[in-house]
Image (cartoon, rainbow, N blue to C red; front, side, top):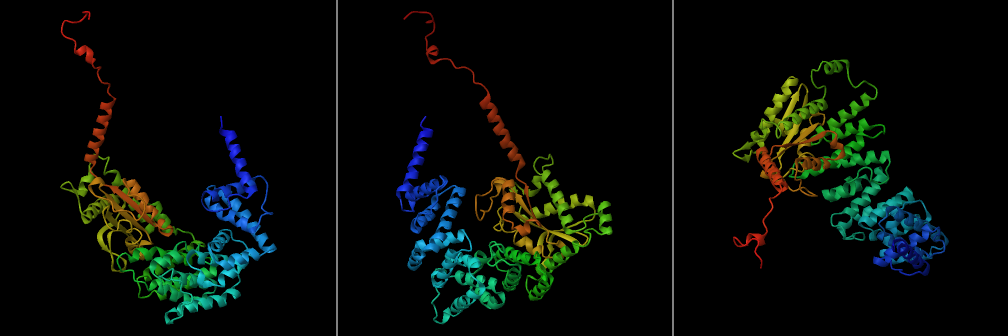
Length: 552
């Protein structure tokens, strides 16, 4: 009975907070009240035209307490618009704020970055922030550089960038004016160089390469590769091509043979390579040919050659039929796959048939993966699977299933399925393998570099249930079902690998033990559901013999 009157009373109280100027602190509970009161003021059709810039800033900073995304965006946009008008009318307050260089000044730069626009306030804020580049670091530096993209011109930025990068390159000889000490791994230097090379690749390419050489892999991934190229600076097709080539030339020199190193570098390299091959700019094939020359003698030469062939195939497909008459006749007559993708689809179909015969089948094929009530070692499991695949694929024609087969770059795939000129590598692991969570994005991809694979690959995991543990994932909870493990592994695949890499989890757990557990559960359920016979009352049971009907 108090719901609606109470809510109305609260709203009226919040509205009075704004009109009386109370709760000016933008932090904590009072900040939430300030934001709520200002939002109600705005919803009532009022505006902030009569408010001071200082008070508008307090509201803007208080929006961090708001949970409703729509109301937060609306209130922040109104605050930014009013601040722009206030700056034009009287910039004195903003000049004082910039002079202090305190947390409020930094917070204003963050908010302007979240609401980009070409305005007098945005342009002035960028200019003032860049006057002292030594005060910029980390996410604050990124915010200022993002603002500069829309509110500064290249001729204005070039001298500044030249000076900043010169200081970075000379910091080892005693010049340390721009060494903030906040990032020991040169992330700030890399960000400056990345911004500069995206702006003018012909001018700042050497600075960019030197910054890459000084940075660690994790820093490079965070600053550049995470979200590349959609999150790069100055996103133009020409810039993306130029920067991508520099990045690939750098990556070619990184050694992928160290333990765990290739798993990190491979997805980033493919991401940059796709940015080149998927570009609509002219001269892509020329760049790929130049990259092929650059990669000679490195581990990446097969990758570039494969990407070049994919690019040429895609170009041909725009003007030619995808299937030649010979290939079409082969498909219609059912004489086998016409490419590696078709071969992988057939192998996956066979794996599905194998999976269907493991648990619910009366054949109890899961026993083939066990030895004396213990899970077999990985190589033995692989050999069992190879035999089952040969049986299944033999129905469709002549196929080779080779364990420990030689693959690209001197490596050996767990299984290699071959039909004619096409091959599909299969990497197999048990759930307890230390590289369980990286085998499909690292080790398997080394085998898919061969031209005969067309980038196709399959990752097979043997699931033994409670008999064998699951290696802890890099993030999130440990899967407790084979379906959950399959989904988690697929989620780790980068977008550029999801179309060519398939994950299969074979449930080879002890089906007899699982059946016994299910039987016990059903028995206990039935037992619990059965009504119990009525019990005699304790008083009646204790009456002496022959005392029925006697008085007390």
